[in-house]
Image (cartoon, rainbow, N blue to C red; front, side):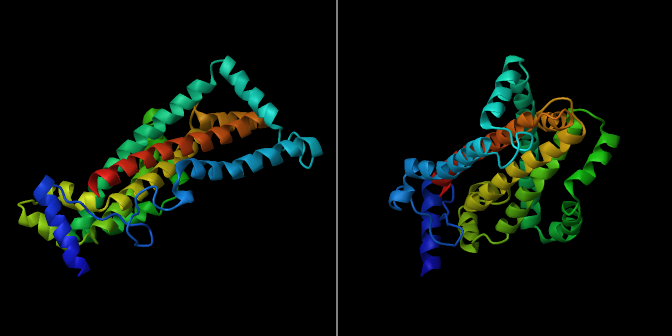
Amino acid sequence: MTQERTTTTSKEALEATGVTVATAENDDGAPHQPEGSGGLLSRRPVRLLLGLIVPALILAGWQLNSVVGVFSAVQLPPPAAVFNAAVELIERGELGIHIAISTQRVLIGFAVGAILGVVLGALLGLSRLADNLLGPTIGGIRAVPSLAWVPLLLLWIGINEDSKVTLITIGAFFPVFTTVSLALRHVDRNLVEAGRAFGLKGLGLLTKVQLPSIIPALFSGLRLALAQAWLFLVAAELLASSMGLGFLLTDSQQNGRVDRLFLTIILLAIIGKTTDALLGIAERWAIRRWT
């Protein structure tokens, strides 16, 4: 009965719009509930306030340490010192440049890696021949640690933007590739047959039926890829950079500026969470649009 209802819904969507509408599911397989239907915790202001509780407690404990002195100022500088370090870098015109350069590197590498991940993930997810031919090689490359790529990229490309963006691209590629290839192998056959019944095939079937049906999985891969992109950014800038947040980490360590070290870590956390939140907004829009 469930399969019949799914097939009927898919056909109605195809007849009405030409695009398959798939049922979004939560991680546990339950149907996706519209926002606002889950009681108090589904309200965005409530979720926001709950999410701020732990950071507020951490900040309070951090400030308390500056009074009690469990850790010395060298080990854990007070919040005021970190704030003053940020003001100092802003006044010198350096902080904005570090943030802008790192963000640009991440966005470019993430975009290229995500596109390649979708394309190759779709190829291996839909073709047994491609999976058997390329799957073992890609799996082996995926097992290589991120820092192992740095000497090779520096040798081949040199110490420039291309080597850094390439390393970030490698980090962003694999989460998207893995989620897309696995999800496409488990697309409901009824959806595919419904699309073919309305004349869709090849690229049209992929873009209008198969990819829309795996939107939740796709965005899960994209969000993992974005986190990996920030991780690989730090790896790239730690070893070969004169600007950026990763460089600021290294420079702060070498000069004993623990306040700037903590500032950089906090900035990476804030910017990373902000970009993830923006991707989450895009995910909700895509789910409403195609599911």
